[in-house]
Image 1: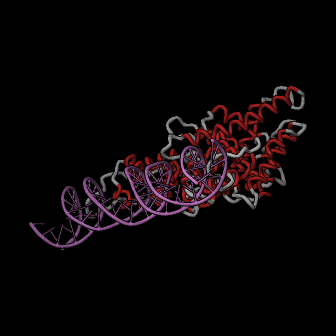
Image 2 (image 1 turned 180 degrees about the vertical axis):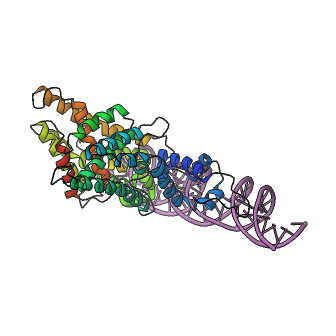
Image 3 (image 1 turned 135 degrees about the vertical axis):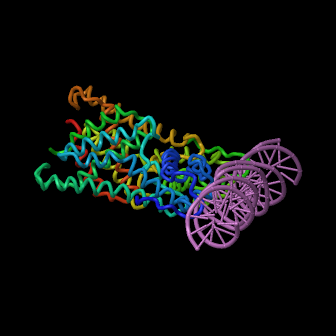
Length: 200
Length: 200
DNA sequence: CGAATTGCATACCGAGCGGTAAATAATTTG
DNA sequence: CAAATTATTTACCGCTCGGTATGCAATTCG
């Protein structure tokens, strides 16, 4: 952010963003619980205490990883939301989402769903956090669609919340399929069908 | 199944199906990894060695639990597949699925998805198993829809595999939403929209 | 130059994990 | 009845988990 004024003490020997990207990948493949600190720190190229000093604890690291994921791997959402018409917003969102779910250089599927729908001993805090972060995306889409209704870009009486939820349902279902190995072209075919339900 | 001919040795002091139902619930709430043997056996009302003697190991127990889940908690699928028209098959499937995802006496969501999309050290065997079991359902639906195309119940040229996949995507997305606490009425609203994409 | 501050590496902690050995209890077979 | 068989109970195993105490290395401040 700001210019890094030289700090006292021994300088950090690794780049926190790079380390975070590595952590994203491990959490993505393994889920929150399935990712052990040993695998995480090995992938991040640092020792355990460095991770604790830099990021807090495992749960903190996961939340930061999800934030980084949203910034880097879900950049397509902002592009989609900027499309001129509601239909284009939805189509772009679903197709670029499918692309992201099936990138050959990334784990299949979506961190937000892979991360953990159900969890162990943490009283579901992680699952709740992920659900809320997905809901944030759903609300952003709903607001964009609401604007579209106001602008006459969607038929009068269209419920933007319901439409946004439907679009998210399709994207989440595609994420489940992608995690199971379904390929990009198949996801596209599903989207072709799903788009028939979008009012225009 | 068959009449239980008296067996030698000390008789089992618990009902395996009842115990399995309890295990289903724990796996459903916690996921495969999140469910510890301590919590499982406590819920099943038996000690650890009894579980190992009766079911094998944790992974075997999980597979049996999923089978039991398919038989008991997904009985609605068979009802849906038996509907007279393709549209009714799909609508019944999605609505009864939404009911199952939001039963007040059961965990929210779906064991097959909650169970674990990504897993830890087991090389994804559990995730693969769950994906295959979902695929079995998708194929059953595809076959039913294929018959519908042959019978002229769906427009000529309709691809039953794609349509089946779309329906499963909607049901899986709804499962993700349900796990996050979205209620039955909201799922119904999504289904109303989703059904607009179904050819008729 | 110290002195202070910060990060790194080794080695370790208690707890919980999945799984099991061994002794005992309940039943059928002869 | 005793022998054989099977289930249950208690206590335990080695391992890995997330997390940390401690001592050393690298840097800035005065």
